[in-house]
Length: 562
Image (cartoon, rainbow, N blue to C red):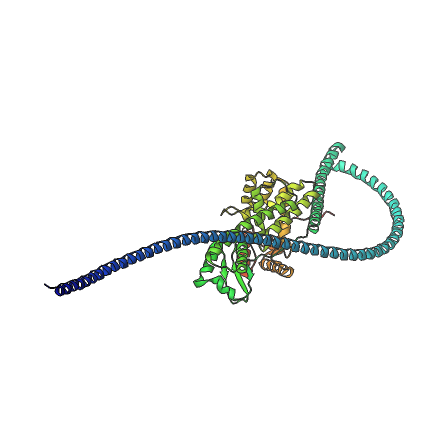
């Protein structure tokens, strides 16, 4: 083999080695590159996952921090809202107190105006009385002149009487002689001794003296009764004149004024749910009609009606009207009303200078403010009765404090919450006994409508004071004209029956007394007549409460001694 061949082979081998090497290097490079790419992808994936984990960790931390911050902010907001609500409630309470204070100030101003009017009236009356006094003085001077003339006539008459006395003395002497002659003749005719005749005459004169004494006793008794009646009228009139109370007519409805008629729809609520919730919470019927800017509340319980009125006013002012809010406001107003009732009772006891009243009796006295009897406010009636009773007791030198206490509590049975079938006077007496009131006070409370026997002098005084307060014209929902017409109608109806002589309407028209002719009406017919009169009054008249019909049949024998 020559060198050239060897060289060629070497070159060929070298080229082949180089080619093989390049091929191997290319494969190795591609393998290394592939591994590097895989490593790079793995590293990138690991970095991406780590970044995702880091980002998720950061996100959770941020969310946790935001949640904590939000909870803190919510707590702060809630605390602020609670503080705002408390502040608003305080402002509401202050506003209510200011409103009540303003109402009291207005009431005092009204009472001051009434007192001023009364003083002016008394001044005018005093002026008229002064004028009348001058007129009476002139009349007295004229009467004095007439008395002087009469005195002169009496002196002339006295002279005539002196002359007549002398003539009578002469006639008396003549009569004595005739009397002696008559006695002598009587002794002869009767055949009686002077002693026997004297005894017969004494017996006759004794009978005549007894008859005259009984007549004198009757006259004295009638005069004493007349004087007692006159003194009683004087005492009662003095008490009435010193007591001036205004009477407010109570109704069974209250009117609440609203801003506009759109508020009526909110009061009714969707499908009537608000008005149903309000009626269920208060027990008062709500009337929403065509009356502009007004809603009517109807109910016979004045306390519940007042709670409903105040609650509706608050709801309208607040603007939030829904069942939950309605129940909340009604409960709150009910608590405030209970406090107002107790405050009214305490204020009444202080005004009347009454000490030691039981708290329950004070609460019942406060409830009287929201009750009415025949249209007359029960608290005003009781206060007036207490004052009249105390004035009458003072005139009679009796216990003024007991009379005032019994007068205030005499109708306490009308405001007892329990449904009791007994008359209110008996119920009030039992309550007074329960809370340790004096026995005379309890008896006066229980006997003021004659349900029980009166055992103290305070009882008739309280009964008379109650009748005076209720019988005053205008005290019980009637004007003076209507009051007089009703009494005249009562007397006309009762006087239309046969046998009736006179009819008297008394006790403000709550009783009529019918005097009948005893020759035309018998005792049995009198009972039937009372029933007929009451039935006709029921058919033909309208009146509050009940009317008592008393038919009186009596026989009077009258004789005149000349």
